[in-house]
Image (cartoon, rainbow, N blue to C red; front, side, top):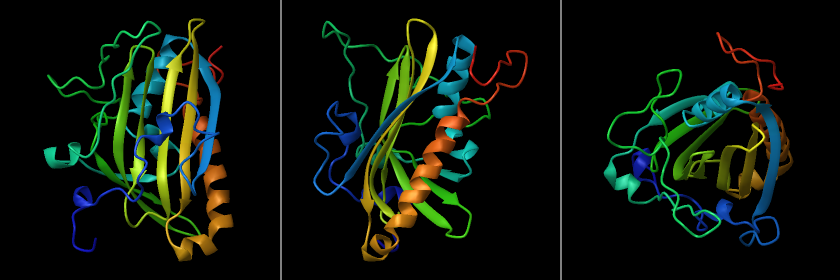
Length: 227
């Protein structure tokens, strides 16, 4: 893969979209460790708006300590990803909300464009074990009360697999963040570092959940619990 631009590199795993499976924990792809956790991050429309706009503009990663360098993909890369159709309980397709609109540019609270399938990025985490992790957005979820995305690993990432971040607002107004993933070390070196990778994963997961439950600044400020 040396010499290829980031958007030209294929993902480094075969089971693209595996994190959408309802039975992910019971039947993960062979050789991959599955993970799924769902946590309430607040309550109310202000929390919902904050959560999904942060999520869809890399805010979860940035607010958790990653330095995110986005490389928007040309049409060729988008052809390697997909936006799955969602259905309601009666089997009727759910129309996209606002994230996938292409008629106009849609931007997050910091001025960053919302994610699109095929977008690529470098995630850099400084520390004792500096990590440079290239990823590609492989699908979006864009429903009125449920939004999110998943990225897949690219060659050069210490792990192989996929991670999904999904926020939803339930009928009682509660806002939730769900994280789903499949992962394994990407090569022999990272297998020797597997205990450290597991520790980093656990630490980052806690930071991800905390990143969307912090107080909202400005005129709509609310407490961390959203109550």
